[in-house]
Length: 180
Image 1: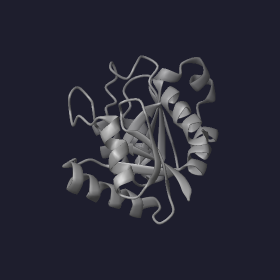
Image 2 (image 1 turned 60 degrees about the vertical axis):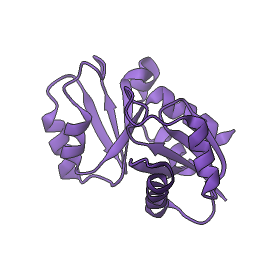
Image 3 (image 1 turned 60 degrees about the horizontal axis):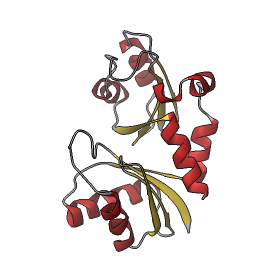
Image 4 (image 1 turned 90 degrees about the vertical axis):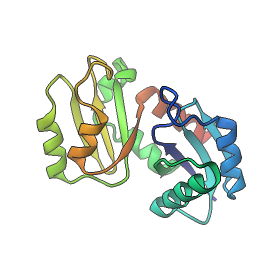
């Protein structure tokens, strides 16, 4: 059985799509996924699965969440091995060390093209920095995410795919939970 990380998009944000983490763990167990553990209230689940992987597992989770919980949201799934690679391939190690709360990893449904990444970088009007590595976009918000004009909507439009973001602190906490 492979250990996976599932990230739910846009739950528990300002009262939007509230989901209790206990209910989320029960949902994962109820659909046959092993040892579900959650981190924080933002929809981070570490679990075991032997049957499904990748996009197939994402579609399964999305369908079952809609059917069983009336929750319509995107799930992004990575294996723990992929997660370790995401941490290791961070193109902004200095920023991660100095100010991890202002480094965001956007976990994407699909890998963006080089052209799409160039269009994203051309759309940046502030001091933000963006790089894509595989199905992740790493974005540094030196002045804070809340003050930036580089919004999720702009990022997703330019990259041509949907995703969900976690700051570097959360990325590292999920990595530790995946090893526990």
